[in-house]
Structure formats: C-alpha cells, structure tokens
Amino acid sequence: MTLDSYFEVFESLSFQVQFSVLSGIQSVKRALARDETVTALMAELAAHPRLVAKVFERIRRLLPLTADATDLSYDESIVAYLYCLKRHDMNLAGRASRLIWDTGGLLWSCWLSYEIIEFIRQIEDSLDFASDAGGDSVSLSFAEKRELVDYRSYAATNHFNVAANHKEFAYPVEFSIAS
Amino acid sequence: MALRYFGEQKPVFARSGWEIPQPDPEILRQHQQSEDLVRIRTVEAVDAVSQSAESKAEIRSVSNHLYDCVGMVFANRRAWIDIQHLGEILRNDGYYRVRRDELTAGDIVVYSRDKSYEHVGVVTSVHPSLGNIPNIRVLSKWGKVGEVEHGLADVPYYLGEPSEFWSERVPHDIRQLFRGL
Image (cartoon, rainbow over all chains, first blue to last red; front, side, top):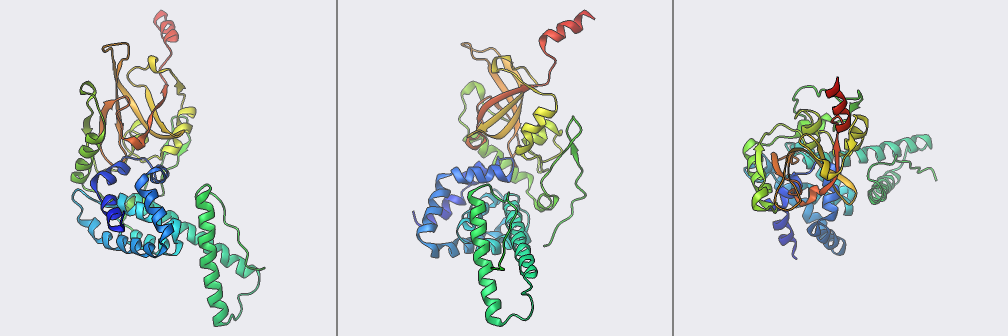
C-alpha cells in the first residue's frame, strides 16, 4: 500500500467509528495495536523512516478540519497517526502532541497527546534533576549544551520506547548523565 | 496550553464509598462534538454490527455529553469512568458472578477481548426463543457514540465478547425468606 492509501483508510468513517465506541485511551491503544492497517503502517514506517515526517505533516493538515467536522471528526485518524509516530520518532510525536493539544476539541487525540507531553516532561525533569545533582550546570560551552540537548533527545526516545514496549507510562523515569 | 473551562469536575463515588478515579479534567474539557456527529457515528456503528433479524440493535439515545459505558451503568450517565476500574467497582460494590442461564433484567454483562475488560452493559430483558437459547437484550453506551439496545453478542468487534455476568440482586433463596416475613 502507498502512504496515500493508508491515509485514505485511516480517514474513512468506518475506520473512525470502530475506535470511537471504546471506553478509554488504554482500550484505544490496545485496539490500535491489534488493527491490521495500523500495524502495516508501522511496519512501513520502520522500513522507510523518511515517511514518518509525512505522517506528522498529515496530522498538521487534518487539525484545522476537525473544527468544521460534520460526519468526520478525524479524532480516531489523528490518534492512530500519533500512535504510529510515537513508536518511531518521539521528537515528532511530542511536536504533534503540542499541536493537537492547542487545537483542542478532540478526545482520544488529546488524551494520547496529554500522556506523551506528560511523559516527555517527566523525562526532562528527571534529566534536569540529574544534571543539577551532578553539579555540572555551571558555564557549559555551546558544544557541550548541544551535546546535552542531543543526548536528551536520544535518551527520551529510547526511554519512551522501552516504556512503550512494556507497560506504557507506568514506570518512574530514572536517568543520570553524571557518568 | 489553552483550555476551555466547562466547570469543576465533580467526584464520583462507588457504592462502597471510595472515589472512582476519572480521567484528568484537562482532557475531558478539551472534548467537543456535535449531536449530529454523534448521531451519524451511532448509526454507522449499529449498521456495522452483524445482527440477526430478531435481535436487531436499536439506538436508544444520542447525546454529546461525555459519559461512557461504565458511567452509564454505575454513575447514572453522569461520568466518564475508564473501563480499567470496572473490576474494582464490581468487586467492592457487592456484585457477584452469575451464570449466563441465570441472567435476568438489571444484571450486568461484561465484554472482554484477550482477557482485558473492554465494555459493560445492563440486561434489559430475557425472553425465551426458538431452541433453548434465550434472547437476551442488553443496553449499553458505545464509547463516544450513543446508547444502543442490542442482542447479547451484537457489539462492535473491539468491544469484545460477553465473557462475564454479574448481579447484585438478592439471591432467589433469600427472596423466599423475605416472603415469609
């Protein structure tokens, strides 16, 4: 299937309705994990990582349409895209989550965005704490700051994936950059 | 983050007195959907369910107020209660397991998929039908869409299959004792 074909399926009424009948974000995530189209898109993104940015772009294009929804709110399409994004690129998933949250009006998408934003915040707080505890907060050079930012991004993605593959968002984040 | 304020979220208490956790109010405040959208989606969801002629699913009500199946059964259509709290509510609020052939109106049907609770509904009627399998009708709220009265197993795929039956009615033998008083 081409990426456009996936978009067509994800944005169809029948796809949206099957996830709109569920009773909580955990149920939605379980259903998305079982859905054949979603798992196929995730495999496609794993094989062709450059497509991840196009999924992010698709979320950006759909968000303005949600306010004028008649029979399609795109909530379930967007949450499915976001679910795929967070498995492949935590940085983009975080950016998409902030866009979704600021747009508002949606349920599942806002709920998953909230979890992702909270998760990233926990990791950042944890890294800040580790940084402060190590006493290395004084006068970092530009190169050192750049390295720290890259390291945080890498750590956040890895830590998120580890958590996502076990019991999502259930573990306290412990991280140290002192070593 | 820009938030719309729809009033303070009120706590929901189980019958046994503990406060049932609700989703973060910031999430629920974000949600908006028109009644038309709910109606269209409810019709689509009902049409997608495979149903026999005698157990046709019927839409009971459509509302854009946010409550789910657990909120319909245990909080009088006034709250969104995540399905993950269902087991705790049933265990702490005096419900006990019954067999399928013991079901009567008012009992609870729990739907599961891969051992996870996914949905809950209330039995509205049990009628004898052809053969020995009674025609059991259930009322349940399908997530963000409307309330539907349907046959026991006629729910959307991701809501699972009827797996457990619960009741809090006085057992039959005790009812006999009450009659003697």
